[in-house]
Image (cartoon, rainbow, N blue to C red; front, side, top):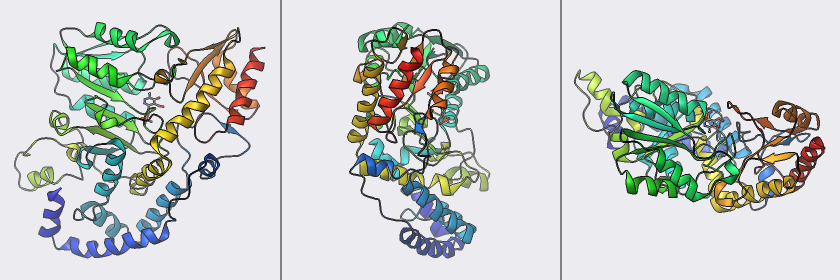
Length: 436
Ligand SMILES: Cc1ncc(COP(=O)(O)O)c(C=O)c1O
């Protein structure tokens, strides 16, 4: 990012803040505890300030900040409250070595297996999806394809983009009952859905309706083999931090993922990822505060030069930087825990739950049992009982469950790193006893 350096050199006023910011960075490090030893799941659970009277099976909804994230937020907040101008102006507009968003993006990029300059810091999955769909330069006659399983945020982002551009939007199912689906049937149904005018395909990595985890790598490969020009847009929010994957090579052209769910990032943080070519295809929607060419073009009253990139797409306006910058601690924590180890633990707890619910004649588990088609969510129904009542009755036993916010509603339990096998047993026993 030579542009940051250019401004650094061109505007001496920043120098004052550079000094303050560098000194402050050191102070921040001194104020933040080192990453704790996270080698046991008890130690991981101890990082959360969750109410111990409750068994929390809805952590995927929005994260409870673990201690490293709380510490980082607090350290940034103290610094910003002491000297908001220097910390924020210096942090945002510093040279490459000190620019805070770049450092945050570099940590995220390491986790994604990609490049720092391809990561845009956003505030939610929803915001990223809207930026991507509105950034695409679609025309009347183009078709956007999504599936019937995607979230409100995905469908409505595409719908608004369709209304603006005159492109059309079509929804196709990938399965009738998630638990009967296979990698082959999912790939086949995706390919069957593509029409001659399809320009984009929207997929959701882990469906928060059924708990289905799509085999994105296989689906992307099959899609690109037959339709290399169709762009794949992925809502990755329930995959990141739960699945052992290298997101930058999974095969999607665009990924939007909140980091305030499975990643345990600060609430109100998310990332959008694409390649340089992918970003170059988009038209920015919100003026960026982290890309200089658009700023220089404005000061010089001339058109913006060069291709769109992640920085130009990152929404500007000042943000809650104590949260946005503290997302680094969440990625550091995941790196310390180990991606594969995290995924294995989530997987083991979810399999335990599915096994414990299996075989009951009144309990219908919708989530596939296969490890490659599931992740951290178990969606189920109890015959003769409304999902809302299931959640309420579990709540009466201090078990926090949720319902899926879709046209067809299921009850959900989402065993995660904050849970123990004993809690999973207790939740399963409670569901079985409700079923009678
Ligand atoms: C699949 C899916 N996508 C998107 C969202 C919205 O996420 P965000 O709050 O990051 O916009 C949710 C919400 O839980 C979801 O389940």
